[in-house]
Length: 143
Length: 143
Length: 143
Length: 143
Figure 1 (cartoon, each protein chain N blue to C red):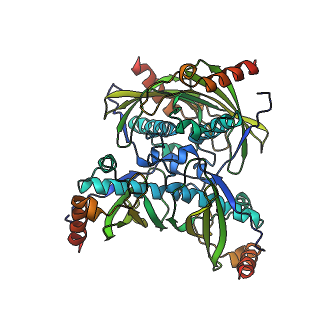
Figure 2: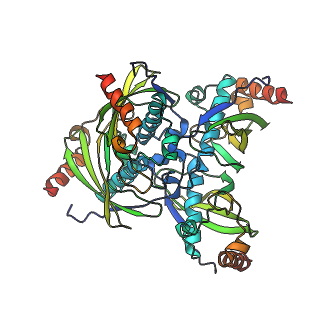
Figure 3: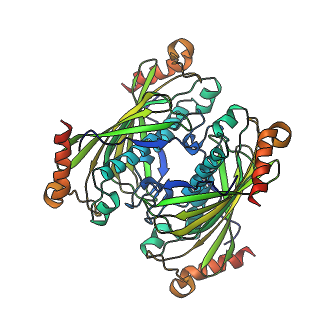
């Protein structure tokens, strides 16, 4: 992976606003999911293909720091990068820029693991070595 | 079933508001689902038991008429009644009263059918006769 | 307005799925809002400009008929047309096509009115004649 | 405040599930909001009264750690406690127990600040001394 990842873009919707007149904070968590799935797509992994092969990727930890409010119709660009990949857990960082205002509006982090549909933890290294090597190479490529 | 059904109560949440300062209209559709599941529970049908027996109940049609705005922290009482039951489709009516203001705030209707997990329409009369007879008796009891 | 309106496109998100494995029906109501706002934008009306001028457009009635399930990652194209415009109420129709499968997946309708922030009904004809004439001309242009 | 705070209870809704068959992680962030507002109510502060007096309380930081999946119809009990109160920021911790299974399912934290409707930070100590003293006494009472 070069620096050529394209930021994911989300336009803030009316139904995402709250009565403070701003985007409700819970929606950023959803945008991070959109960006995560788009990130995987950009590196060649279609999320629904993963699931078709018996692998799901539940979220283990999420955090978000809100820096500037986002308003209805603002376009938010989300850059995703890998913080850490252990073979079992994947930590991603999200940097959200409000393109309408030019401000950094939030940043966040998710930790996801990989399990089968019964909830058993999957070691990608052992069971999905292609995916494992791809993620490893991305981590190294970012350095 | 006598007239003794207990209306379902939902407290309007902050994250359900929008920047008009009122509850976003899409949430009423979700409240109708909460009320539908509670209605079934009151007549003895646990929704997750239905699904465990291979029966799902997707929505085929929904409508809602908004009469008065609902605000954050308002308590909405939803009365559910059966409009029609054909053995294949179930039409329910929802009457939503804002208990905080005493006003009728909305009314709605859903049509749901019954299918298996592959999407094949199920005739309750043929395959789930106990449930069929229960719904029939409720329709008659309402008359 | 010619027939040159561009359908609004929404990609079905993971957080919009439910445990039936399909998109939850309440989300289509939100997509209709996205399409409505995009429709207005295409005819030259920015929703937030409307609100800045003191005009809000709450939903008075909504309905949706679900024809085919939509799945995660499917792209839904939504065509919007004016059914009726009375000077006070605007009825829009929505035709949703799942571009991934090529199927008509749903159609819906909304009735919205125009009010000020205190909830008083506004006659566009009297108070926002430019907008009124635009909507009138669109209705005539569709015939 | 004694230890007599009542945990807030939320029943997991169908529309909160996703296609993994579990509650989507973004909803826990919303439940934490419900619990936060209920917590304030229990200590005598009605959220809408705060807003009526010109004070809003946007979220500055949120985090959640997911320990066990929650399923449709599960009842989640959320205990809220004050981690830190600085006069400007309020840090709350949330401990979520799935009452249906008896398991600790998640824990989270929010940092909220207080601002006026123009987004200016408000020092409760200076401008809302009653609320300030209440929060101070709660922090001390927890020790």
